[in-house]
Length: 515
Image 1: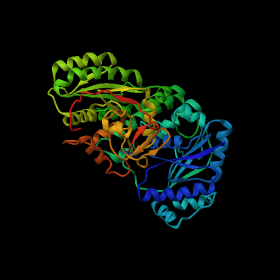
Image 2: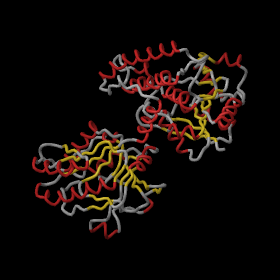
Image 3: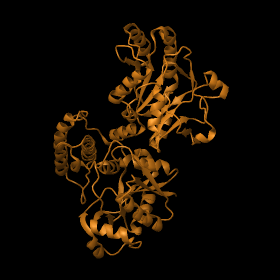
């Protein structure tokens, strides 16, 4: 049975890294048979759920996972007992009951001196000197998951962004749907400064931040479902009475009503009537983790080119609808022709395939059209990802966007996953392809090959957040945009597959110039 240790991480170049270095030495020293796998989340507020899900995927084939935080340690006997009990029972097992927070002063002494307590730590009396705060029960820190339960759950709910409530969601799901075990004992937490995104500590003008509001409201829905549908709770001790559970639910709903007022001011969705079951919450979490896609087809050009390019667009949309699949939630044709008659024809072609048409009322050139489309996507894209293409490509083979999403989701340094097109211009045919760089410029992975040479507006998938980078003005804006992205040495672009062509360019009559 293969057991792994999964830890959510974000490098800070400071105190958090030092704490993890101290803890990692201990985990590796006393649990040498359990590989430690880090899952990193580096963009935006730290998402512990996303980081853990990445670690679980990166760990490959495993039978049990010990999910830990990067700032905790326990007695070795507790961890081993939890691993053994989870294997025997098939149930999620917490390796501790009490949470004990070591003081700032003692944390810094321990890290500086690299003090090791030994596999069984020390006796509780001695630890009392180091501890400044104790909670009687913890639903986080160190949990053993059997693989079957993890897979059925779909991992942690990635809708929780920033600090808070993802652990209560897990507790609710595990207690309500799977059952759990617990090993008696303490988990010790090393002190660190409170992070941004920490609920009430991270208010904005007297209100919760948008992320904290979402966490607090989503967490309450898990907690209500546990009590309402399963007769359970999250406190230590005996099962709650009906009266206690009803009081809990009333308090949670009342708190949510206050949060709803702040959510409305922040422009967040109205969840007031949304009180789902635990299975419904799990399905929502799985859908969110899978990601969603906005498809946008950019169309424009000089008026005299419209008759030819109308035929290209018709073929392109038909091919896209037939060959490109995945969690598509929005289909847009972005019209830069700026002509009412053309707009009517675009709408007639696009509507049967579920597309709607938007764009400026007056004609714009390529660069201004891209700037306008980029701004539209920044404000209006519903998907977590954008699949962007132009109106003169047809798709030579099926494209499953879920596969491209998975590659981007596990590597935040990948800015784009493009589809390789055919060599359609004379210089490309002469060199045998469109890439134009020697092979050492590309690094081949399992399923794609990556580089730092250019950003392409050929069909590609990228995160919606990429549109926060403004589209540049001037000629050759596509090239300029790529150079700006690659100023960050971590950023790469990629082509899906192993070098085969996925799309064919049919636009013999050009839309414009100065790309």
